[in-house]
Length: 196
Image (cartoon, rainbow, N blue to C red):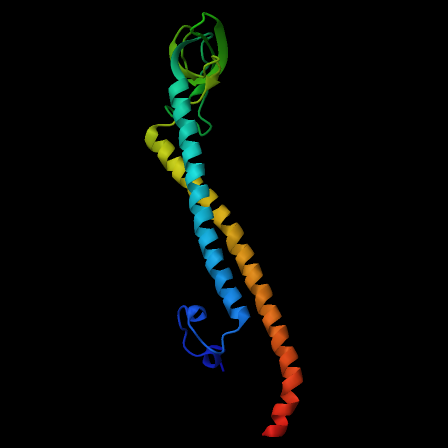
């Protein structure tokens, strides 16, 4: 017979109703369940919003600080054949480029360029405030998407901590309640059998 048949229909908020059979353990468990849900929601939302905001703020700072600079190819880029031998399927190749930053210092680095680019060919690169090569900064919409994804993952991870803690505490309360019932049954069970 399924366990549900012994429990009867599920009654919402039964731990909060007045009942002469309600024990102290039921009240404690009700507060544990309520506290667990509140902490789970609050921790998840706050951590998720904080993480999303931090990611979006960092990416916005990159958009503001990183700048596009015109660099020049130093040596001709070599042609490479496609790994599959298809004509016209050549990919971009690595080449050394040189650029000058605002203070006049020259920098060099490796970037991908079109195959066959000649020395002096202009290439747009992105640099940080120190003049180092960086990738293209994310757009505002890409940053919002990335912030949402990171915020969601961080929020779920943070929410899992109070949720799992609440489950563990509730399991411990359940074990203590069962031990108390076993003790009471050991004491009263033999008397009940004689009265029948």
